[in-house]
Length: 111
Image (cartoon, rainbow, N blue to C red; front, top):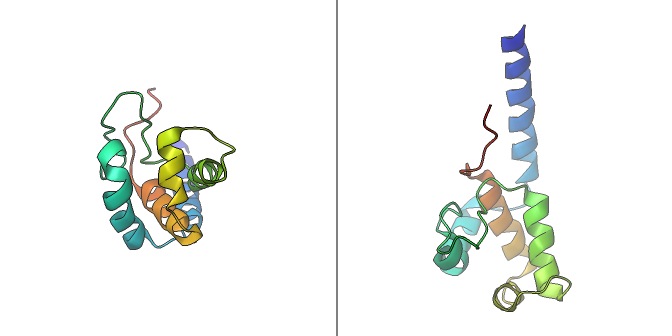
């Protein structure tokens, strides 16, 4: 019974993940992330240059999109991210967030 439950949960998570990134072009997001985000967060978003920089890989697409939009609008303050977000179009944000949310991040719950 536990195995069936685990399979069901994995299937639902996969369906949700695919739907969550449907708004962005993952390949375009990968290219944009490599050019814009990779220097600080790592090309896949899983190996930040500095420990205080966040891991982006595996984050929820809606969380990443809100953060970038808030940096762009000035609602969220950070001199570096504010400048980076200003250069991103709405499509760029959709694409980059699709890319990072599609990655497997190093963060997990230890059981």
